[in-house]
Image (cartoon, rainbow, N blue to C red):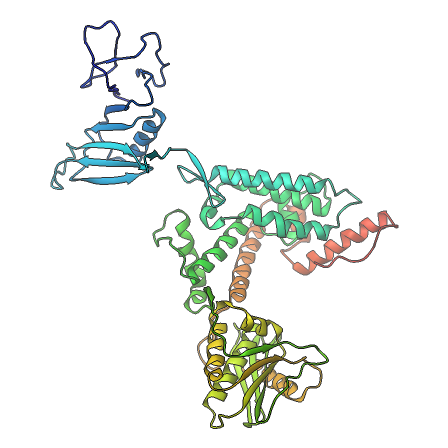
Length: 540
């Protein structure tokens, strides 16, 4: 620091024996202290700080000699906070024009030559702390906001280390209930890790995911997953972490961080809550990375921001299996709908049967529609047919064997664009007719339901004619696509692994069927060691 001086609200006599000379060239060379015997220790070489009363204003000046270079102003504000200055005047900042600027809790008033000054030879700045209702905002190096610890450099080192340490402590608490041949089953440990530990570690991943590539942070994250793998398998301490991860179907934790960050970005982007800029900077890079791989998913997605819709002009009825029929009065239009997705063709379809109108419809929905979407689409299409039909009399009863679709139509909150559209179609015919959407047990010999199921299977075996996706991409399908992409990335990491030579000879990659078998196998081996233990299998 070139020079700092303080101005106290007392008169200063250059000839007074109670004066203290400040180092450097300054407009104020001497300053009077309340007690000449009380002098604070040097906090910076060459700078003497004088004790002040609470009602005094602490002012300093600094010949900074340019703050054009990146990071210079940050250092000035940090030093101002460390010395507890109220007002700091800077000379030779070499900024152009004049104005007001806010940064890191301080307000900067600057004045310089016009923008035609290409040499940046002039300019002064006055920095004052920001106050709210006469309360000065304190500058700190770290702060926790919404569960994420932010540091002044946004490196998230503290957050990652704290979350990793908390996860390890939690695992050690669980480890007290696990032994080599007793304690919690491996499947239960697997569930605890996936459902409790991982969400804690990956919280807020969309903010700090770009730091997970750093080796130091990767080591912290790997310690968590290694401890969980040792607890699940009971392996020796020398077992390679990467080999245990592949055998248990776990991706390296830094890849899991990217996956969770992409899912969080997708949810915020689909709900129009993403505020990150498109520039390639820090966490906002997730947008460029995601759009380059999943552009089709964002072109037409079903997820919307949660809406509360109270307008409902139809009734939802979910009866008992033995008493599912709805009491009707003549004339009533009874309809049956169903949705299907074939694992052989990986296609989805919907079927509609309206005996009174003589309508039998089979709809192909392509390869990206889920079973839930097929069921809701069938109900919406059935309501559209009834609305456009010539016969507009009597009540309407639409039967479906999907309770998930009925519960989605019954709820007040809506997060699916397709469900919202279906509700609108039902409300449109409910303005003039009494509409009931009811549940019918599937595969119980109900003629209309069996016919609708057959039409849905026909639609699921027919290729969709037109551009995919036929329906907006659901959140579950999108997460499935992201999961597959990250699994391929984990597979490449395993193939490029230079160590684990013996493990790679036996294990070629992640296999979830093998993972389920191994977890059951481990349990059976434990049961053999203790015959009196329960030997039932573990389902993951």
